[in-house]
Image 1 (cartoon, rainbow, N blue to C red):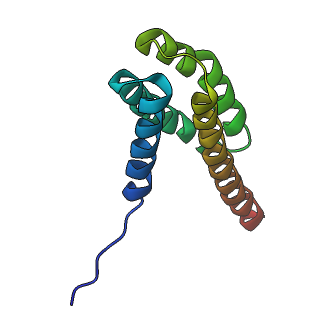
Image 2 (cartoon, rainbow, N blue to C red):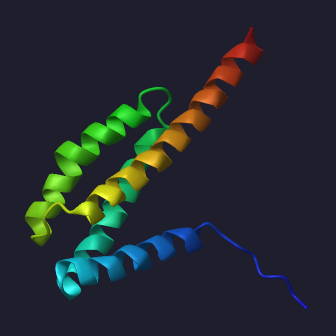
Image 3 (cartoon, rainbow, N blue to C red):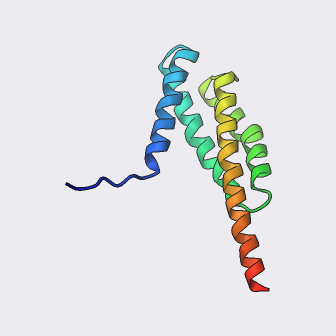
Length: 114
């Protein structure tokens, strides 16, 4: 019997599907589902700013609220609801985790250099 390899892509796909299904019902159709998939994709990419040590969370927050979400609202016709707020905070949690990890490794590298 062979053992299956698990990758992190399953979490992302699950997130896309969960927010698409919720978007379908919250916004009342396929446009809401597709808009939520686009929102999830863009905010997941924006959360990568969290890998910048120390200030990554601030960069994510400013970028998500001032650039990404207004662009999504203009492009898709979605409006701000509890679902888009959860999506932004989900990205914030990922960004905080990434900032903590990258800051720890920078601190470790500096400490070992001394």
